[in-house]
Image 1 (cartoon, rainbow, N blue to C red):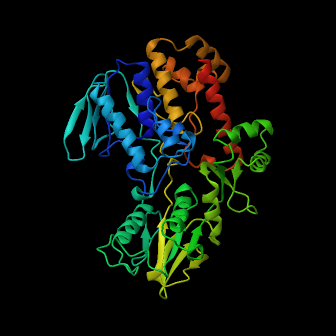
Image 2: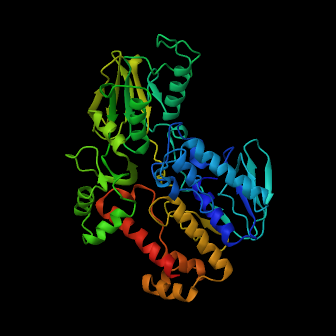
Image 3: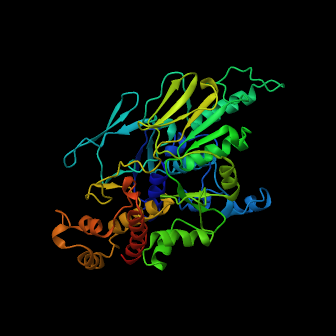
Length: 461
């Protein structure tokens, strides 16, 4: 019951009001990865482009303007706002009879019922439910955003090393702040090690939006001086400037304008103020749609202890210090004692989890997988997939034109065995990959072009 499924369900029920949907959710409440995200997280894009089409995430515009002095398109929802929003949406759909919601349950996609055989849904407490699917099984989990609280680090960490997720950092800070005495010394019950005492040194692991948020949180909320922060940056990344007018489509448009020249395109976007980078002297090697504000970028640039030695392969103890290894030869030693060194784990893959590799959205007449058609935000892709599904159900999908486009795009011999609508849709729509295929300029260019092509095909059919 994450953002992808919510947007799909909303559009499907708008187009097919008589449809009945059973929603199986492994988590206890709707919200997907937001349930497990760190407490200080906000959307990095405007709320107005996120969520479901029938319900405004940013809320009432008059209230935003006249009570909160916030422009609606400047609002970026917090974790609590997003969880409330998705929770209310599910309650509304359950109350009007369009949706059945099964939290704390999971579906094993390895099962292979034949024909009209019952599918089995299992609760986390061990109870089983048999379900006969009337129309289609929709897989909304392959694009799941993997967050640090749910993904242990993928390298060894020796006992005695203080390694925290952003969730633990936030919870510890909140608890210790609430229980601090007037002299500033921590005296409370605690929730993990004391991470707010002066003299601590913080090492942020990772270069994605989670790591950027952690660097800013350390300075803004915890008042940590930037000299007491080190930042492990395996790869520098291009970022969208929040106030620059850029959007996830900017790169694709720039590539078209510059005849596919990727280096020229990103530099042109930087010159226009749409793209920014952490260090103007270092060329980023990745772009995965992070959006950053000028205040955040300023805070990030205050951190000068930057460790660019690739990915961490282990963290160990040595002579009272913490030592990070980067392969067999490279290593980094903490400037303070091991007890005063706090590592912040921000190395989870996020939406780039690799789970969708080899999958296709239009698998068969009985199954569908929710994958990205376009560059983020995710809501647009999922709404369009639901619109395609509703058009097929209503008979308004232009099959003849699909056939002509398919013949132009892909030889009929390679369209698959079913030879029907799904085969045509597989030939026309290609999902954006959420794996390691984004690791070079050519791949990034092709991903950007695919978004534009999918939009054109969607509008055509």
